[in-house]
Structure formats: structure tokens, C-alpha cells
Image (spheres, rainbow, N blue to C red):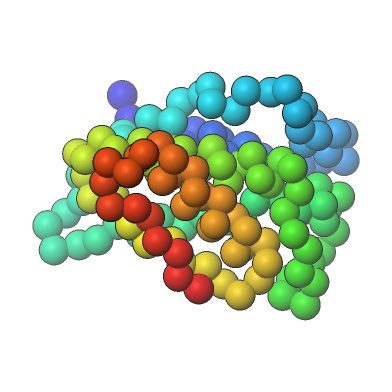
Length: 143
């Protein structure tokens, strides 16, 4: 059974925030993030010949996101602990996708000039490459 897009995205912990749920984004330092369904991207339908698949991912959570503050391009906060975990889990899922070698997987991670995007993509690439353990072409950063 194929998972929905929202189920696949939930592995990064991205959910709509309410004032009451903001506390839920506090990260337990003893929590094991290696558990979870990191095979969720393997359920995507095959790529049509002559086409490419583009994966779009939002940056990891920042403190401003957690507090529901507007940030935009003029405010450039770093990601928080939860954002780091989100990026790491996404990287693990991308690593599993590459490791499966069953579909065309990403080999390049591009990001904007914003700090939160750079941090998220660097963590994603590191996590994906740690899953691969040098067995395949590493994920490269561009930005």
C-alpha cells in the first residue's frame, strides 16, 4: 500500500503548530531518532520515462517557527534542536532511498542562502551519507 504524501512528510516531524502544541516540539535529548519508518520514500510511484523527480523539503524548525513568529528572508535564525532532528531523519530517509537502488534517488541537495536552509541541507546530506557508509556516490551540497 502506498503512503500518502502527508504520511511521508510526518517522518520529519512537520505538523501544524497551535499555541497548545508548541510545547510538543521540545526535543528529548535521550530520544532515539533512528526508529521510525525511513522506507516511506520507497513507496513513491515509478518515475515516468523522460521525466525527473524533484524532492522539495522545507528547512528544519527554528525557534521563530516554534513560537509562531514571522521570519521571512530578512530574519535568518538557525534551526533549533527539533529542526536538527527533522533534518537528520529526512536525511536517513533519503539515504535509505539511495541505498535501495530501486528508483532514481537524489544525489544533489540545493539550498538557498539562508542559514536555516544551509544547516538543514548539510545535516540531511551528512545523515544520508552516513546511511550509505561509502557504498555509493555521496549526496553533494550546492548553494
